[in-house]
Image (tube, rainbow, N blue to C red; front, side, top):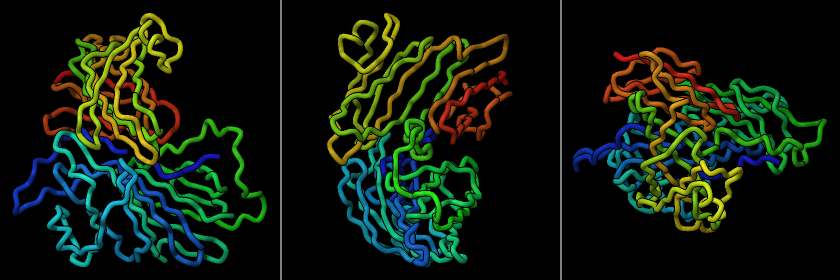
Amino acid sequence: MLSLAVAPLLATRVSAQQPRASASAPARQTEADTYTRYELLAPTSGKFRIVYEVTATTPGATHYFNAIRMGSIASDESVFDRASGKPLIFDEVGAAEARAGGIRVNDSMQRYIRVKLARPVPDSGGEQRVLIIKTYEDRASYFTRGDTIVFTRPLGIKRNAVVLPPAYELVSSSYPAQVLQEADGRIGISFLNNTPAEAPVTLRAVPNTGASTRASRSSVASRLSERAHQDREIVYFLQQPETHAFDLYHDYTESRPGTSTYLNVVRAGSSVSNPSARNLDTGEALRWEVLRGKAITEAKLAVSNVTPETEVVVFHFPPVTEGASVRLRMSETYTDSVRYKLVGDELIWDRAFGRPSNTVVLPAGWVLTNSAIPATVSTRPDGRVQLDFLNARPDEINTLITARRR
């Protein structure tokens, strides 16, 4: 049985954080890691429950503002701090209050949920993770046509899931999606939007009058997981190719009670240096150590096939408590002469990515010439070329990138 149950989760943040604004011009609200789950309620109600995960990233911010979509009637709201699992104080405000809090308001009639964060967003590369639960009534988005239910809605964020009412089967989806059965038998439709535009989602479903809708564990359950809800992301900053070196950071959310370490097994053929880590919820630095070969076995770490060359970076943090989670950012420098090299005058990056969100930043002074896997390409303020790969598939993508000097 596969569940699309609520858990913390993704977006890549590689640009510099905003400086604090003056008293007359509050810093613009920024956010990341947005994920929305729509649970369709009774077909004739026009209502759906929304589970919205978001990360507030504006340094120093004490509040987060969530817009209530125009045309929807909101009710049954609750808000939680995802780090501790505890409720947060919130209220509903108008455009004036939102503007004062850093929102660029386009409509004076717009309403917002204003959330008081558990603590200010840390200045030192931190964030605050928020969970907002609410029910919308929106008959333009969710309605019936005979015995068919229709959910149609342009979705702007990149990660979404829609869960059908009990005893309904999916008959059409306008957008490529995973279809995953919930533990209670409901059908979930989950997708990653890897375009810069809104996803024009239209789903249709009918009552299931044939096959059983009772929940039962699939024989291939171990191969099923919701890709859009996975919370791992990685960013590579390539150094000059003659060095074969690249800096990276990877983000991960740990929610298993009692867990107090993260193990990063260095890929064979690579070597690691300059590790560091921080708790993104608090901004505090974390302790780490690098173990090799026999030391890994003696430490009784859960690492298989240990050889004298095996290298593991161990990051330590306080044990996770029940109902809580911790968002980690681990940074390292890797050297890999096989997968990152200079052949003649051509830079070659040849590496497999397993995470949903992967970013590669080319070295200064290099022009992109090939990318075998489709990517969103942009130029950073420092002139470096950035490639963003959003992989909706559950398997790895073998990226091959080449570049030449300007």
